[in-house]
Length: 106
Image (cartoon, rainbow, N blue to C red; front, top):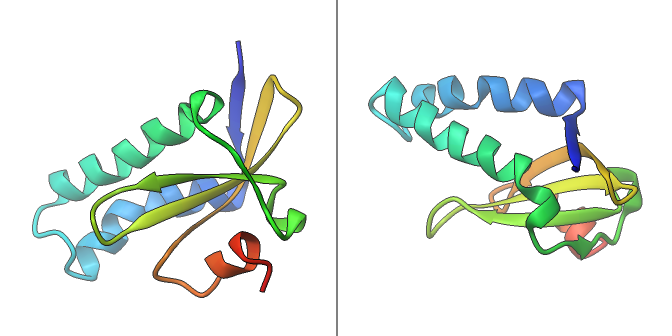
């Protein structure tokens, strides 16, 4: 069975996501923001079964998966793997400039 682990940076991002979304006004209710964040976490733990792509900048992780949260937001989850263990090293969205670094190599 595959094991998925998150770096401290990613764990912090995921932990703070629901409150951040609520503060920025993307959600009106904490429960909805928590559901949104929990769906992302569920996807992260399903990464061993998802389609992987090779990154252009391996320092962010050698591979990435895409998670389409809604029609406007796609999460890019970068990770390293040896086939049985997955280390999630970075998460970003299409709303930030960072994602282009490991998707397009910019």
